[in-house]
Image (cartoon, rainbow, N blue to C red; front, top):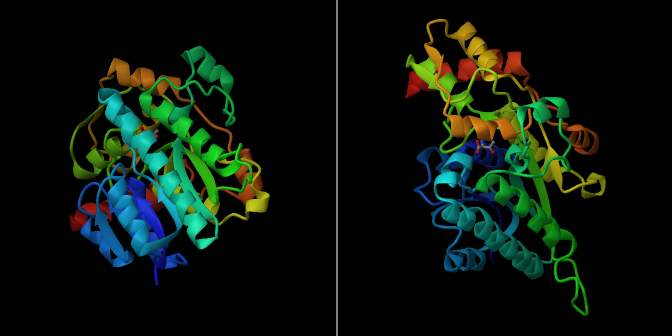
Length: 340
Ligand code: AKB
């Protein structure tokens, strides 16, 4: 008998850590963690299997489905925006072909066991692209359908995969004589920049916020790679996990769209510095903008409108700018660096 499981790809990444802990503790099915690198030992306790492998390896995916009955997939594996600009070809393979492989796997699984397979996909504010700062600040909080003109490979990949997911769920094989739904129940969240107390991101362009905080906690100087006035939305990691699991558990009848914005606070880089300095007054934070990375941040919205998520599945963040630092980031980061 194959066991019903939830598959989490990109398990070692920032979101993977918190999500695996949550699903391993509260989830209805057991968890399989998949990552290109050996799975972090901290995650082993929450998983029925930890698999090191590549989402581009179709043989590996076939082996997985021969052993497990997959009912939900959180597909987190991706190359983030800065890294993707250095290796756009590889980014396209991982971010797009990898997602397509998993959508096909979800469809195949749904056909085998006869139940829908939930496919939960973290998209990003990188799916937006604003042409200049004047337009960015005049636009106000963006709705999901506005300014979908990404300027990065990562943003293009995320936007396209949102469409692919919607295609699989609503229109897959629409010309078949006897049409049947694919069984893939695709749901995506457009995340803002994320800040975790226990992991550091790698290869993103919103990384200046977590890097600034972690450097301060370690007593190291930090030169921020965007200017003081750079502004995008952010969220504390526990809220990101909450958003993913709330959307996964939401009643499908209530969902009016497949892709939802979520947000919590949207400080400028200068305001982030001030906030970090309040808790770490000795921190040495300077600004040394990298023109090209700053330009990417400038194309991302200053704020997003998450009204549909609030209306359809009662989304609201637990942490605002004050409480994220006071109640989560600062205490948890102190604890983290005490232990490591
Ligand atoms: C990145 O910076 O690439 C990501 C994102 C905004 O999706 N953190």
